[in-house]
Length: 480
Image (tube, rainbow, N blue to C red; front, side):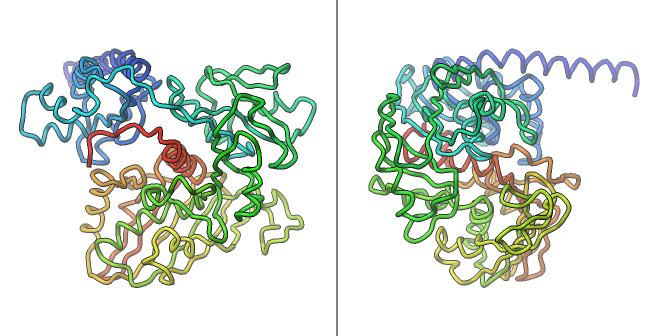
């Protein structure tokens, strides 16, 4: 490399840094003044650093083989600010791609046609919905992080309270510390204040009441100004309608979402697949399991195009709190052995649970699981026999298209890197990520490898269900 080439490369980088830096206040204005959330292929841009914004642009090459330039998105953001938009979710990468393919050169005219339904609606507010987290473990704390991040002007999901059993005299500071620091997901992005007198935590301006209770029936939420609340049960203690209906006896509570597979007639919802089945009359719904959320969207995509005759799902799953750290008694088979030292064969209900979201696959899948000594990110191996023959390249291209252009783009992500490993998917907001380089296909035999952040990706799916039930979802652009 010559000196001139070296200098040119550095100059190009600083130019992109400068442009990304200029984008940050514009992204913030769109979010705070217009309630417009911007992203790049599902990777949010609000409250992100310069480097994070540049990495999101760089990531675009994994989706459409072309690195997205900040010089493409910067003028787009400027143009959006001139349109006085109302609440919306806008994917800049998809919008740029659609504009390129439109064969037009008038960006303003393109945007006015594409965003017509929200242009001129600046200042419009949606009615927010109160949310209570019953239980504050791994999923509960991640749900809190996501809801605080998306709080905006408070007209979406409004995290009002968490309900826990008091563990110690310094319980409040302990809860705050666990929310503030996470060994897997890193530090909370913001500030957390503790008010011992009022039993509250304030996270980035969101005041969260901490309520101590020993059972679901003993809380009067209206005492804290909470009404018509969505209660999110993260404990897993109650999984049937009888147990979960205890929450509905509390003043101020109106619906319950279970963050585990539901039993009996409870609807098991995988967002993107059967969330439209939720009705106002549904007082209790389940968000199914992390594994079910990871595999169902991919299975639907494959079944729609090729048909699935039968198959087996093997889950390689990170260890969880229900296993022992060292060998000790456990009522479950093998789970008493040290989670940090062993691979542990165990059962999973995910394969059977698929039928609750995709009835057409009932009885076609078997499943098993292996717990492994990693704290987060799991993998599902889908070993499928298809009705129609295909090949590896065709399947990968089809799944890449589904990740980019279909209604399942929030559920299915796609990577074609030969170097990715499990920790690369910590913080993924998708239900599952197809590893294209691992795909095996021979005629009607197909094996797919799907990574998933069994904590954060699943929590994002839960939030999507909550947003639907609360009717606080803004319109998304570009439309599919």
